[in-house]
Length: 379
Ligand SMILES: *[C@@H]1O[C@H](CO)[C@@H](O)[C@H](O)[C@H]1NC(C)=O
Ligand SMILES: *[C@@H]1O[C@H](CO)[C@@H](O)[C@H](O)[C@H]1NC(C)=O
Ligand SMILES: *[C@@H]1O[C@H](CO)[C@@H](O)[C@H](O)[C@H]1NC(C)=O
Ligand SMILES: *[C@@H]1O[C@H](CO)[C@@H](O)[C@H](O)[C@H]1NC(C)=O
Image (cartoon, rainbow, N blue to C red; front, side):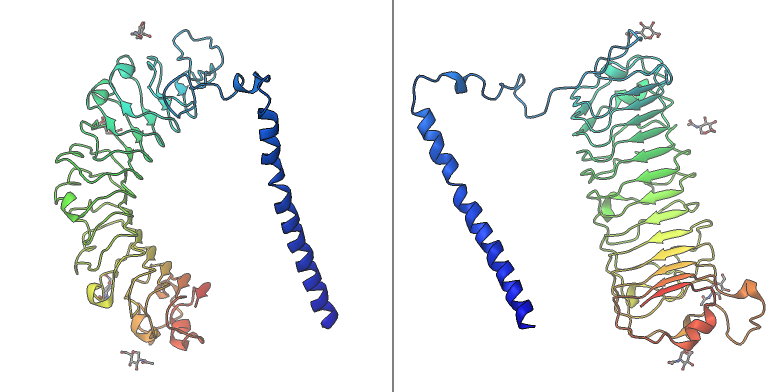
């Protein structure tokens, strides 16, 4: 023991000495420099200093692509003969969108320094179906842009500086990603007539309850995925299309769910409400008793009891709440007295997270008796 401790302290000492030693070396360097600069007869160092930036900006200059067989290929972009309908202009330090050739269907402009999207570049780009503008500095997408591209299906503009949902979005859109912007306004009618939109991602913006009117999502009859996580919502959004499959509302301040909120949904399978302010008071006992639900996430809230859920639910996240006890008889979606040989009645729950609560093992017997498909329970 003693020898070991001795070795450790010797090692520590050695390391300490090393640190002192390297620190002592450092000051030597600066002392040398004045010695050389003292000589006035050396004009060299001044000239080859940092090259002056060509533009008054701290962005690096655009990267030009290789020469292209297409005369209309913008110099900053790649036009591959194997994919004549794709225009690859991503990761090129572009500030201004170049003129988009007519043949372009898929337009990749992500990871650049674009600050505004104007119609000029799109005057001949009527065939564009997909645009990826993610991770730029866009604060404005001019409405006229969308008049040029009436067949647009996917618009990805996440990771920009938009303050509101762009106006004039085409009715043809199927996917709209506007996450990680600064959106605090959805102008009335923004999503009108978008009957083909299946995905709407508004994650990580600054939306509050007043910005989501009862009619905001009214026309989105095909919507399957709605992501409103990381906003400033205190209430569940109203008027959400009832054909939705996936609803993400994590990291808001929601403290209350109306009793019949999920009643009219016919396909809802994935609901995430992690990191909100939900307590038993704001969660009506049977609000999650929705037979289509497969995955329910309620972690990092203030629930004191396990809410009721349907026998079809497969994944349940209740970690980091205030649950002190769990009564398997009470939460079992069917009566334990029933004939358990009928496997179709057995609840489908496979994965249950309960860590970060005030529970301690063992898992109550009635929980094990009820949830026979449980493969994993995290306490
Ligand atoms: C627009 O596209 C057509 C067809 O490819 C082409 O003939 C024409 O020159 C283009 N106009 C401009 C302004 O690029
Ligand atoms: C919606 O999709 C259908 C089927 O693909 C298509 O016929 C229709 O034109 C689309 N609507 C709009 C507004 O683009
Ligand atoms: C849950 O829903 C099922 C089917 O819709 C229904 O039969 C059952 O009574 C409900 N349970 C509770 C506690 O509301
Ligand atoms: C669980 O709930 C049932 C039904 O309300 C009740 O009869 C039973 O005593 C409870 N079990 C425990 C351990 O509290």
